Image: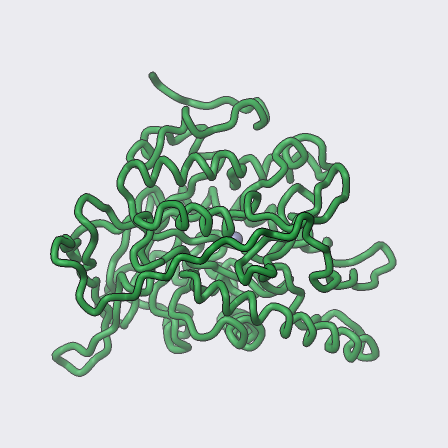
Length: 420
Ligand SMILES: [Zn+2]
Protein backbone atom coordinates (compact mmCIF):
# COMPACT_ATOMS: atom_id res chain seq x y z
CA UNK A 1 0.00 0.00 0.00
CA UNK A 2 2.77 2.45 0.77
CA UNK A 3 4.48 1.85 -2.56
CA UNK A 4 1.42 2.48 -4.64
CA UNK A 5 0.52 5.35 -2.40
CA UNK A 6 3.88 7.00 -2.86
CA UNK A 7 3.62 6.67 -6.60
CA UNK A 8 0.16 8.17 -6.68
CA UNK A 9 1.25 10.86 -4.34
CA UNK A 10 4.18 11.82 -6.49
CA UNK A 11 1.90 12.07 -9.50
CA UNK A 12 -0.63 14.18 -7.75
CA UNK A 13 1.95 16.39 -6.11
CA UNK A 14 3.17 17.37 -9.53
CA UNK A 15 -0.15 18.57 -10.77
CA UNK A 16 -0.95 20.41 -7.65
CA UNK A 17 2.40 22.10 -7.63
CA UNK A 18 1.52 23.25 -11.10
CA UNK A 19 -1.86 24.41 -9.88
CA UNK A 20 -0.34 26.42 -7.10
CA UNK A 21 2.36 27.93 -9.25
CA UNK A 22 -0.24 28.86 -11.78
CA UNK A 23 -2.58 30.39 -9.31
CA UNK A 24 -0.09 32.00 -6.99
CA UNK A 25 0.35 35.02 -9.19
CA UNK A 26 -2.82 34.83 -11.18
CA UNK A 27 -5.01 36.94 -8.93
CA UNK A 28 -3.16 40.20 -9.37
CA UNK A 29 -2.68 42.65 -12.15
CA UNK A 30 0.75 44.00 -13.04
CA UNK A 31 0.12 47.03 -10.86
CA UNK A 32 -0.31 44.78 -7.86
CA UNK A 33 -3.96 45.64 -7.56
CA UNK A 34 -6.34 42.80 -7.00
CA UNK A 35 -7.97 41.84 -10.22
CA UNK A 36 -11.62 42.76 -10.02
CA UNK A 37 -13.94 39.98 -9.15
CA UNK A 38 -15.92 38.78 -12.10
CA UNK A 39 -18.90 40.88 -12.99
CA UNK A 40 -22.08 39.45 -11.67
CA UNK A 41 -23.85 37.04 -13.93
CA UNK A 42 -24.77 39.54 -16.58
CA UNK A 43 -24.15 37.75 -19.86
CA UNK A 44 -27.36 37.41 -21.68
CA UNK A 45 -27.71 33.84 -22.68
CA UNK A 46 -28.28 33.62 -26.37
CA UNK A 47 -30.53 32.07 -27.14
CA UNK A 48 -32.44 32.03 -23.89
CA UNK A 49 -32.20 28.49 -22.62
CA UNK A 50 -35.29 26.53 -23.45
CA UNK A 51 -36.83 25.42 -20.21
CA UNK A 52 -36.65 21.69 -20.15
CA UNK A 53 -39.29 19.88 -18.18
CA UNK A 54 -37.83 18.74 -14.93
CA UNK A 55 -38.60 15.09 -14.33
CA UNK A 56 -40.06 14.60 -10.93
CA UNK A 57 -37.13 13.53 -8.80
CA UNK A 58 -37.50 10.00 -7.66
CA UNK A 59 -38.51 10.07 -4.04
CA UNK A 60 -35.97 8.52 -1.74
CA UNK A 61 -37.92 5.42 -0.86
CA UNK A 62 -37.73 4.27 2.70
CA UNK A 63 -37.84 0.77 1.30
CA UNK A 64 -36.12 0.02 -1.99
CA UNK A 65 -38.06 -1.90 -4.63
CA UNK A 66 -38.25 -5.61 -3.93
CA UNK A 67 -36.00 -6.64 -6.78
CA UNK A 68 -33.14 -4.43 -5.59
CA UNK A 69 -29.95 -6.30 -4.75
CA UNK A 70 -27.75 -5.84 -1.67
CA UNK A 71 -24.23 -4.53 -2.23
CA UNK A 72 -22.54 -5.49 1.02
CA UNK A 73 -19.82 -3.88 3.12
CA UNK A 74 -17.14 -6.14 1.66
CA UNK A 75 -17.93 -5.26 -1.94
CA UNK A 76 -15.96 -2.45 -3.52
CA UNK A 77 -17.65 0.85 -4.20
CA UNK A 78 -15.61 2.30 -7.04
CA UNK A 79 -14.59 5.93 -6.73
CA UNK A 80 -13.18 8.05 -9.53
CA UNK A 81 -12.56 11.76 -9.64
CA UNK A 82 -12.21 14.45 -12.23
CA UNK A 83 -10.89 17.95 -12.36
CA UNK A 84 -12.89 20.50 -14.36
CA UNK A 85 -13.02 19.39 -17.99
CA UNK A 86 -11.34 21.25 -20.84
CA UNK A 87 -14.02 23.00 -22.88
CA UNK A 88 -11.64 24.23 -25.59
CA UNK A 89 -8.89 21.59 -25.94
CA UNK A 90 -7.23 23.13 -28.99
CA UNK A 91 -6.92 26.35 -27.01
CA UNK A 92 -5.82 24.69 -23.76
CA UNK A 93 -3.30 22.24 -25.21
CA UNK A 94 -1.92 24.40 -28.01
CA UNK A 95 -3.14 27.93 -28.68
CA UNK A 96 -3.41 29.57 -25.25
CA UNK A 97 -0.50 31.71 -24.06
CA UNK A 98 0.19 29.54 -21.00
CA UNK A 99 3.65 28.07 -20.49
CA UNK A 100 4.54 24.66 -21.85
CA UNK A 101 4.57 23.22 -18.34
CA UNK A 102 1.07 24.55 -17.71
CA UNK A 103 -0.15 22.97 -20.92
CA UNK A 104 1.53 19.72 -19.94
CA UNK A 105 -0.33 19.95 -16.64
CA UNK A 106 -3.63 20.12 -18.49
CA UNK A 107 -2.67 17.05 -20.47
CA UNK A 108 -1.63 15.18 -17.36
CA UNK A 109 -4.56 15.91 -15.07
CA UNK A 110 -7.61 16.80 -17.12
CA UNK A 111 -9.93 15.27 -19.65
CA UNK A 112 -11.64 17.11 -22.47
CA UNK A 113 -15.38 17.53 -22.82
CA UNK A 114 -15.47 14.86 -25.54
CA UNK A 115 -13.47 12.42 -23.45
CA UNK A 116 -15.68 13.06 -20.44
CA UNK A 117 -18.83 12.42 -22.49
CA UNK A 118 -17.39 9.14 -23.70
CA UNK A 119 -16.35 8.11 -20.19
CA UNK A 120 -19.87 8.72 -18.86
CA UNK A 121 -21.37 6.65 -21.65
CA UNK A 122 -18.87 3.83 -21.10
CA UNK A 123 -19.50 3.71 -17.34
CA UNK A 124 -23.23 3.67 -17.96
CA UNK A 125 -22.88 0.89 -20.53
CA UNK A 126 -20.80 -1.17 -18.08
CA UNK A 127 -23.61 -1.01 -15.51
CA UNK A 128 -22.26 1.52 -13.02
CA UNK A 129 -24.68 3.62 -11.02
CA UNK A 130 -23.75 6.76 -9.11
CA UNK A 131 -24.25 6.67 -5.36
CA UNK A 132 -23.90 9.40 -2.76
CA UNK A 133 -20.62 9.09 -0.86
CA UNK A 134 -22.44 10.09 2.32
CA UNK A 135 -24.56 6.93 2.03
CA UNK A 136 -21.59 4.56 1.76
CA UNK A 137 -20.24 4.94 5.30
CA UNK A 138 -22.01 5.99 8.47
CA UNK A 139 -21.13 6.60 12.09
CA UNK A 140 -22.44 4.40 14.89
CA UNK A 141 -21.65 3.83 18.55
CA UNK A 142 -19.68 0.67 19.27
CA UNK A 143 -19.99 -1.67 22.26
CA UNK A 144 -17.60 0.52 24.25
CA UNK A 145 -19.69 3.61 23.65
CA UNK A 146 -17.22 4.98 21.13
CA UNK A 147 -18.23 6.50 17.79
CA UNK A 148 -16.87 4.51 14.87
CA UNK A 149 -17.53 4.31 11.14
CA UNK A 150 -18.99 1.39 9.23
CA UNK A 151 -19.72 0.54 5.63
CA UNK A 152 -23.37 0.45 4.77
CA UNK A 153 -25.09 -2.13 2.62
CA UNK A 154 -26.39 -0.42 -0.51
CA UNK A 155 -29.55 -1.60 -2.21
CA UNK A 156 -29.12 -1.35 -5.97
CA UNK A 157 -31.20 -2.10 -9.03
CA UNK A 158 -30.30 -5.55 -10.35
CA UNK A 159 -27.14 -5.67 -12.43
CA UNK A 160 -25.83 -2.31 -11.24
CA UNK A 161 -22.45 -1.62 -9.61
CA UNK A 162 -22.02 1.40 -7.34
CA UNK A 163 -19.69 4.25 -8.15
CA UNK A 164 -18.80 7.51 -6.43
CA UNK A 165 -17.86 10.55 -8.48
CA UNK A 166 -15.91 13.41 -6.99
CA UNK A 167 -14.75 16.60 -8.70
CA UNK A 168 -11.73 18.42 -7.33
CA UNK A 169 -11.09 22.15 -7.54
CA UNK A 170 -14.52 23.20 -8.82
CA UNK A 171 -13.48 26.76 -8.09
CA UNK A 172 -12.93 28.14 -11.60
CA UNK A 173 -9.45 29.38 -10.75
CA UNK A 174 -8.12 32.38 -12.63
CA UNK A 175 -5.73 30.22 -14.61
CA UNK A 176 -8.55 27.99 -15.83
CA UNK A 177 -10.40 31.01 -17.15
CA UNK A 178 -7.41 31.67 -19.39
CA UNK A 179 -6.87 28.10 -20.56
CA UNK A 180 -10.15 27.08 -22.13
CA UNK A 181 -12.46 26.18 -19.27
CA UNK A 182 -15.90 27.44 -18.33
CA UNK A 183 -15.86 30.28 -15.83
CA UNK A 184 -18.67 29.83 -13.31
CA UNK A 185 -21.91 28.04 -12.52
CA UNK A 186 -25.16 30.00 -12.55
CA UNK A 187 -28.85 29.28 -12.16
CA UNK A 188 -30.52 29.79 -15.54
CA UNK A 189 -33.91 31.28 -16.17
CA UNK A 190 -35.25 27.74 -16.27
CA UNK A 191 -34.07 27.18 -12.69
CA UNK A 192 -31.39 24.70 -13.69
CA UNK A 193 -27.62 24.94 -13.41
CA UNK A 194 -25.80 26.38 -16.41
CA UNK A 195 -22.14 27.15 -16.95
CA UNK A 196 -20.97 30.56 -18.01
CA UNK A 197 -18.33 30.32 -20.68
CA UNK A 198 -16.25 32.72 -22.76
CA UNK A 199 -15.05 31.47 -26.14
CA UNK A 200 -11.30 32.14 -26.02
CA UNK A 201 -11.16 32.80 -29.75
CA UNK A 202 -14.12 35.20 -30.09
CA UNK A 203 -14.44 36.44 -26.49
CA UNK A 204 -18.16 35.79 -26.77
CA UNK A 205 -19.67 35.00 -23.35
CA UNK A 206 -22.64 32.67 -23.18
CA UNK A 207 -24.35 30.07 -21.03
CA UNK A 208 -24.03 26.39 -21.85
CA UNK A 209 -24.76 22.95 -20.44
CA UNK A 210 -22.48 21.16 -22.89
CA UNK A 211 -19.01 22.34 -21.86
CA UNK A 212 -18.84 21.81 -18.09
CA UNK A 213 -18.49 18.56 -16.13
CA UNK A 214 -21.34 19.45 -13.78
CA UNK A 215 -23.97 20.39 -16.33
CA UNK A 216 -22.94 17.57 -18.67
CA UNK A 217 -23.56 15.06 -15.90
CA UNK A 218 -26.86 16.74 -15.05
CA UNK A 219 -27.95 16.27 -18.66
CA UNK A 220 -26.66 12.72 -18.80
CA UNK A 221 -28.61 11.68 -15.71
CA UNK A 222 -31.73 13.34 -17.08
CA UNK A 223 -31.38 11.19 -20.17
CA UNK A 224 -30.32 8.10 -18.21
CA UNK A 225 -32.03 8.24 -14.80
CA UNK A 226 -30.79 4.71 -14.02
CA UNK A 227 -27.22 6.03 -13.96
CA UNK A 228 -28.00 7.54 -10.55
CA UNK A 229 -29.28 6.01 -7.31
CA UNK A 230 -31.91 8.35 -5.84
CA UNK A 231 -30.63 11.21 -7.99
CA UNK A 232 -27.03 11.14 -6.66
CA UNK A 233 -24.51 13.00 -8.82
CA UNK A 234 -21.12 13.76 -7.30
CA UNK A 235 -19.15 15.48 -4.59
CA UNK A 236 -17.67 18.88 -5.35
CA UNK A 237 -14.36 19.14 -3.46
CA UNK A 238 -13.75 22.83 -3.00
CA UNK A 239 -10.82 24.95 -1.93
CA UNK A 240 -11.52 28.55 -0.95
CA UNK A 241 -8.53 30.71 -1.85
CA UNK A 242 -10.10 31.92 -5.08
CA UNK A 243 -13.67 31.54 -3.91
CA UNK A 244 -15.99 28.74 -4.99
CA UNK A 245 -17.91 27.76 -8.11
CA UNK A 246 -16.63 30.84 -9.96
CA UNK A 247 -17.59 33.37 -7.25
CA UNK A 248 -14.76 35.23 -5.51
CA UNK A 249 -16.04 34.71 -1.98
CA UNK A 250 -12.64 34.66 -0.27
CA UNK A 251 -11.14 37.15 2.13
CA UNK A 252 -7.83 38.60 0.98
CA UNK A 253 -5.24 38.94 3.70
CA UNK A 254 -2.75 40.50 1.31
CA UNK A 255 -4.80 43.66 0.81
CA UNK A 256 -3.82 46.83 2.66
CA UNK A 257 -6.20 47.85 5.45
CA UNK A 258 -7.61 50.70 3.36
CA UNK A 259 -8.42 48.27 0.56
CA UNK A 260 -10.30 45.83 2.76
CA UNK A 261 -13.71 47.57 2.96
CA UNK A 262 -14.19 47.66 -0.82
CA UNK A 263 -13.14 44.03 -1.14
CA UNK A 264 -15.50 43.05 1.62
CA UNK A 265 -18.43 44.71 -0.15
CA UNK A 266 -17.66 42.78 -3.34
CA UNK A 267 -17.08 39.59 -1.39
CA UNK A 268 -20.43 39.77 0.34
CA UNK A 269 -22.12 40.36 -3.02
CA UNK A 270 -20.41 37.23 -4.35
CA UNK A 271 -21.56 35.24 -1.31
CA UNK A 272 -25.12 36.33 -1.98
CA UNK A 273 -24.79 35.48 -5.67
CA UNK A 274 -23.48 31.96 -5.11
CA UNK A 275 -26.10 30.93 -2.56
CA UNK A 276 -28.85 29.99 -5.06
CA UNK A 277 -26.31 28.02 -7.10
CA UNK A 278 -25.39 25.97 -4.05
CA UNK A 279 -29.03 25.44 -3.24
CA UNK A 280 -29.88 24.24 -6.74
CA UNK A 281 -26.85 21.95 -6.84
CA UNK A 282 -27.97 20.35 -3.57
CA UNK A 283 -31.49 19.95 -4.87
CA UNK A 284 -30.17 18.12 -7.92
CA UNK A 285 -27.98 15.49 -6.26
CA UNK A 286 -24.70 17.34 -5.73
CA UNK A 287 -22.93 17.55 -2.38
CA UNK A 288 -19.77 19.15 -1.06
CA UNK A 289 -16.46 18.33 0.54
CA UNK A 290 -13.34 20.17 1.62
CA UNK A 291 -10.22 20.23 -0.52
CA UNK A 292 -8.55 22.50 2.10
CA UNK A 293 -8.70 26.28 1.84
CA UNK A 294 -5.34 26.92 0.25
CA UNK A 295 -4.77 23.62 -1.56
CA UNK A 296 -2.12 22.84 1.02
CA UNK A 297 -0.01 19.73 1.28
CA UNK A 298 -1.07 18.23 4.58
CA UNK A 299 1.96 15.96 4.76
CA UNK A 300 4.33 18.92 5.03
CA UNK A 301 2.36 21.67 6.77
CA UNK A 302 2.59 22.33 10.49
CA UNK A 303 -0.32 21.71 12.79
CA UNK A 304 -0.73 25.47 13.20
CA UNK A 305 -1.05 26.10 9.49
CA UNK A 306 -3.39 23.14 9.03
CA UNK A 307 -5.60 24.54 11.76
CA UNK A 308 -5.52 28.02 10.26
CA UNK A 309 -6.31 26.64 6.80
CA UNK A 310 -9.14 24.48 8.08
CA UNK A 311 -10.74 27.23 10.11
CA UNK A 312 -10.61 29.50 7.08
CA UNK A 313 -12.28 26.82 4.95
CA UNK A 314 -15.03 26.40 7.55
CA UNK A 315 -15.52 30.19 7.80
CA UNK A 316 -15.45 31.03 4.11
CA UNK A 317 -16.60 27.85 2.36
CA UNK A 318 -18.31 25.69 4.96
CA UNK A 319 -20.44 28.68 5.93
CA UNK A 320 -21.80 28.64 2.38
CA UNK A 321 -22.04 24.94 1.48
CA UNK A 322 -22.96 23.62 4.92
CA UNK A 323 -21.51 20.87 7.05
CA UNK A 324 -19.60 18.08 5.41
CA UNK A 325 -17.77 15.02 6.68
CA UNK A 326 -15.81 14.59 3.44
CA UNK A 327 -12.20 15.71 3.05
CA UNK A 328 -10.20 15.37 -0.16
CA UNK A 329 -6.47 15.71 0.31
CA UNK A 330 -4.82 18.23 -2.02
CA UNK A 331 -1.90 16.61 -3.83
CA UNK A 332 -3.37 13.33 -2.56
CA UNK A 333 -1.07 13.86 0.41
CA UNK A 334 -2.19 12.46 3.74
CA UNK A 335 -1.03 13.98 7.02
CA UNK A 336 0.69 11.66 9.46
CA UNK A 337 2.98 9.94 7.02
CA UNK A 338 2.45 6.20 7.05
CA UNK A 339 -0.79 6.50 8.91
CA UNK A 340 -2.82 3.35 8.76
CA UNK A 341 -5.81 1.85 10.41
CA UNK A 342 -4.81 1.61 14.04
CA UNK A 343 -2.65 4.69 14.58
CA UNK A 344 -3.79 8.23 14.14
CA UNK A 345 -1.51 11.25 14.34
CA UNK A 346 -2.37 14.70 15.69
CA UNK A 347 -3.16 16.45 12.40
CA UNK A 348 -5.59 13.74 11.39
CA UNK A 349 -7.12 13.83 14.87
CA UNK A 350 -7.58 17.57 14.53
CA UNK A 351 -9.37 17.27 11.17
CA UNK A 352 -11.56 14.55 12.60
CA UNK A 353 -12.37 16.69 15.64
CA UNK A 354 -13.89 19.43 13.46
CA UNK A 355 -16.25 16.95 11.82
CA UNK A 356 -14.50 15.24 8.92
CA UNK A 357 -14.97 11.48 8.78
CA UNK A 358 -14.06 10.26 5.30
CA UNK A 359 -10.61 11.20 3.99
CA UNK A 360 -9.94 10.63 0.31
CA UNK A 361 -6.58 10.46 -1.36
CA UNK A 362 -5.59 9.23 -4.82
CA UNK A 363 -4.39 5.80 -5.82
CA UNK A 364 -4.47 2.94 -8.25
CA UNK A 365 -7.62 1.36 -6.88
CA UNK A 366 -10.79 2.30 -5.03
CA UNK A 367 -9.27 1.26 -1.75
CA UNK A 368 -10.91 2.07 1.57
CA UNK A 369 -10.27 1.18 5.18
CA UNK A 370 -12.17 1.93 8.33
CA UNK A 371 -9.93 3.10 11.11
CA UNK A 372 -10.15 1.21 14.37
CA UNK A 373 -8.82 3.82 16.81
CA UNK A 374 -10.94 6.77 15.73
CA UNK A 375 -14.21 7.36 13.90
CA UNK A 376 -12.89 7.81 10.38
CA UNK A 377 -12.45 6.19 6.98
CA UNK A 378 -9.48 6.54 4.65
CA UNK A 379 -9.89 5.85 0.97
CA UNK A 380 -8.26 6.20 -2.43
CA UNK A 381 -9.78 7.26 -5.73
CA UNK A 382 -8.83 6.59 -9.32
CA UNK A 383 -8.24 9.42 -11.73
CA UNK A 384 -9.30 9.45 -15.37
CA UNK A 385 -6.92 11.97 -16.99
CA UNK A 386 -4.11 12.19 -19.50
CA UNK A 387 -1.66 10.21 -17.39
CA UNK A 388 -3.95 7.23 -16.98
CA UNK A 389 -5.43 7.40 -20.48
CA UNK A 390 -1.92 7.22 -21.87
CA UNK A 391 -0.22 4.85 -19.46
CA UNK A 392 -2.78 2.90 -17.40
CA UNK A 393 -5.19 1.52 -19.96
CA UNK A 394 -5.29 -1.95 -18.39
CA UNK A 395 -6.17 -0.73 -14.94
CA UNK A 396 -9.11 1.26 -16.25
CA UNK A 397 -10.54 -1.36 -18.61
CA UNK A 398 -13.22 -2.20 -16.06
CA UNK A 399 -14.49 1.35 -16.62
CA UNK A 400 -13.64 2.11 -20.24
CA UNK A 401 -11.04 1.49 -22.92
CA UNK A 402 -8.63 4.41 -23.17
CA UNK A 403 -8.26 3.63 -26.86
CA UNK A 404 -11.89 4.58 -27.35
CA UNK A 405 -11.72 7.59 -25.07
CA UNK A 406 -8.50 9.54 -25.58
CA UNK A 407 -8.72 12.27 -28.15
CA UNK A 408 -5.36 11.78 -29.84
CA UNK A 409 -6.31 14.29 -32.51
CA UNK A 410 -6.19 17.21 -30.11
CA UNK A 411 -3.93 16.11 -27.27
CA UNK A 412 -0.21 16.79 -27.65
CA UNK A 413 1.79 13.96 -29.18
CA UNK A 414 3.23 12.53 -25.97
CA UNK A 415 2.75 8.83 -26.62
CA UNK A 416 0.70 6.14 -24.96
CA UNK A 417 0.96 2.49 -24.08
CA UNK A 418 -1.97 0.53 -25.42
CA UNK A 419 -1.08 -3.11 -25.82
CA UNK A 420 -3.43 -4.74 -28.29
ZN1 LIG B 1 -6.59 19.77 -6.26
